[in-house]
Length: 387
View 1: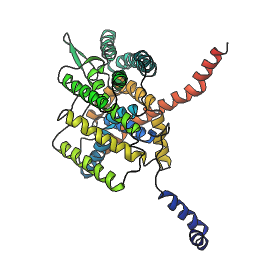
View 2 (view 1 turned 120 degrees about the horizontal axis):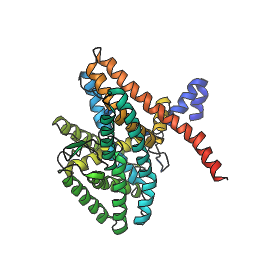
View 3 (view 1 turned 60 degrees about the vertical axis):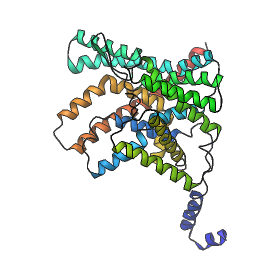
View 4 (view 1 turned 45 degrees about the horizontal axis):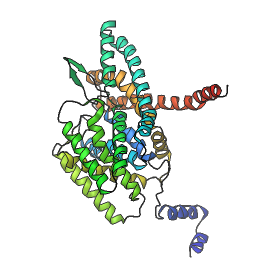
């Protein structure tokens, strides 16, 4: 029957018909190395947008819709990253876990801290001209906040120590990974889940006090998200064929509950340890994150310039995150505030400039680094190892 239809159609229409049939076949999600790249790319874009000062201040109808969409996708981005980290997690000894996590997470973090302080030292002196003493003082405070792994500012002996604005996530991931690995070595099944729930509650309780160093609070909360990701792979939740009716219904319920809490003024922010409604909201954000992951996996069939670009950003998400940390902490946090507060023109143009400059700088530097890593650094390493 299909051959008869294709024979009667023109060549162009036949091609479109084949594409239509292929597009509507059942989607088979498989465990692959880059299965989360599309969503990770969206998360990176969301993080960059969330740090663009003032772009959501003026709320017309269009911006209200944009805020709702952004809230659904962006607010749960950090829980989603922790869930994806737990998805492929494998238990090992404590020593091997610490060594591996230090090499893959903390070494890039330390390099980023050094580069951030160097750029801040130069930028602060040039932009504000407060003198050498003032510049060194502010840079030391920034370095101290980074070494303490602060996700929020902290007052120490009357001095306000600034937070590590972006890269704190890596510190929390390190803590969460080490704790979760220990849980895996002692528990399994329901006991593992219970241990992670208790750890997340302890993390929430700790968050009620002053900002904890080395993101201990966020790391403990993250164990619950990593556990959910771990079970998602073990039980094949993301790749299973679930009824569209069930998946859509559950997603809508999660979205409506989340938007209702948002309308009531609830604000979820792991960096600042804002967990409205306590552990209940921590778990709600896990459900929203799982729903986002589930649907973005089903968008993996989409091919085009935008989705290809997002996948590329997702593959290089670590570099994007760290370069954004340098850009925002050392320069952007000062420049964008001054620019936005002194702007006299149309708001839409101001927002376009703020977003455009950030995207060009961060993504431009990211791909320059990726190119240099492939074409320069790798050759230098190869040359040294061959001697």
